[in-house]
Amino acid sequence: NAGVMQNPRHLVRRRGQEARLRCSPMKGHSHVYWYRQLPEEGLKFMVYLQKENIIDESGMPKERFSAEFPKEGPSILRIQQVVRGDSAAYFCASSPGPPGTGSTDTQYFGPGTRLTVL
Amino acid sequence: AQTVTQSQPEMSVQEAETVTLSCTYDTSENNYYLFWYKQPPSRQMILVIRQEAYKQQNATENRFSVNFQKAAKSFSLKISDSQLGDTAMYFCAFEVEGIGFQGAQKLVFGQGTRLTINP
Image 1 (tube, chains in turn red, yellow):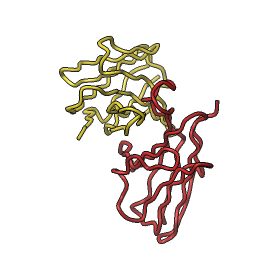
Image 2 (cartoon, helix red, strand yellow):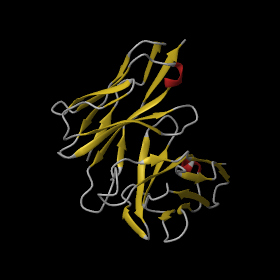
Image 3 (spheres, one colour):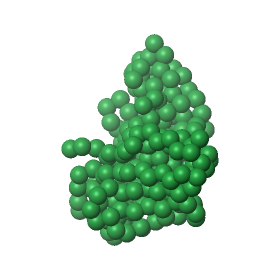
Image 4 (spheres, chains in turn red, green):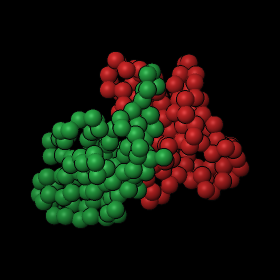
């Protein structure tokens, strides 16, 4: 069973460009979470999505950031007009569906995407 | 709001020794989960151990065990017979139990403890 997949692993953008980060959850998982890790810090929650629904976006910056998890395909975290402060590692995690489908409260992480803004 | 505090930024022990990493948290919730994640130099986040708050028995996974003190809101990780491969950042994390069909909720992480195992 393949783990959580993220691509690209490394992404370099110039200020003002757009960054698109992709996440494919583990097989059978329908919940996706995005976290950001600044250098020498812990992970900070950004957004929690289920298929075609945003469940909790309380950690998302109000501007320039958006996330989606379409019916088909990976989850996408999109950052418009990137600035140097967006440089960080972005982690995606997934967990199974509703109660009764397994260990519903454990999140499994992907390898992360390291974004560098020049 | 929940907070997680790891008071030891760095720790260093010799191979084969036992080491304990501390973690405290603050919450008004009664039903929740606690986790320890390991982040080696590869930066991959690896689940080490998980504890349900309603369980009094401390979780164990091979050389890893926890000391969960619910009243004190303390959740320490003990690594026995430490190995060079245990060198990593260790993060304590808290999660409120999901309601109904919401599934897992957001994780709140501590700042991490950088653990070095010396040969």
